[in-house]
Length: 438
Ligand code: PHE
Image 1 (cartoon, rainbow, N blue to C red):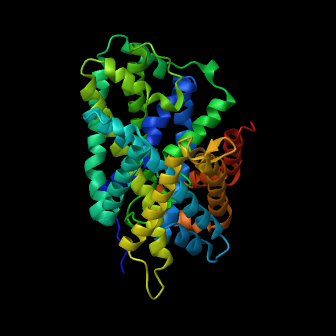
Image 2 (tube, protein in one colour):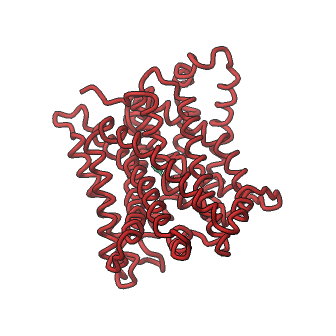
Image 3 (cartoon, rainbow, N blue to C red):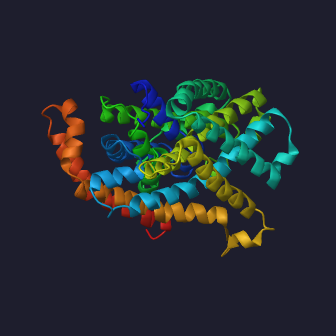
């Protein structure tokens, strides 16, 4: 059967950008920035995105586009043998756990959105949290059920622009508050003394997460990019949108935080407990809070969609040549059920009553996060750069890029210098930083 491709350049950009724009931009970026020195972190982050994020996004796109396959097929086709299969297998396992974890937080977004409209005290219970994750999972599965064009592409073409408009509306509301200016100066004032090696490594890790690098999503979406589309400019636009949304989220959050005299260093609860308190005291706070949590839900659900698609596409590719290939719908049910199970277990582990889900003082929820982001993701990212830099014929990249760069061969030399010599070391440093060894 002929594989689905995105119908247009715009569709491809919207679909991939809405997968990349997610909790990483609106939940994680603001609190990371708050904890890592404001404007200094922003500048380091932008440098990381350009020097590190963009070339890696292009790499994953090329892997998907040139092979026309999702993660597992891409490695096999490009390697010409089975020796690298451990990377895609690890990727799928990791993505399954990350999706379970992501659905828990997406569930919180749904919960706060719900609470901002009606007062539902029961939603705060364990059952309420599980129902909210279930709602998030079912919506994501509904989108995937309709396929790449009618589901993912169509939905993102509607939701991505809505998300941008909502963000602008929110920024305007928040900037009208007294004392909002202090928030903006925190975000944009650059103080070089705040840059430490920790800031740089945190910014690098955040750049990975926010651009969806190293999780197979970009390889999978790359395989849907039409043959004639330039992957480098596509990636540049997606990186631009992703970074813009992160900065806009900062502009919507910090002015409110400063206007109410709260310290910006709140950590992960910034969006889920500090903001509701602020909205409660703000004039027109209820409308602002409905808008904000709706925006967060859109961002999170479209990213959950892109994560689940990695699993669905892999199941379909893997069984493509078998007598009874797995259809999109069947694959979706298997993948969705596995991720939902993980997500329910993670939520249950957050209650002290469920001691069987708590190990060494940490909950299953914490463990999934620690193991995936500190160990599995760096191994996969390292596998990807070493594989593409050293083991894939340079012709693959040349053929993809030649029509666009003309005679500017130096870009290719810079690219190979980065991917062969710099990136493996940098990924190791990020990993050591997140384990706490640096
Ligand atoms: N980039 C997404 C975010 O910012 C997370 C994500 C990672 C989504 C990998 C899909 C694949 O939240």
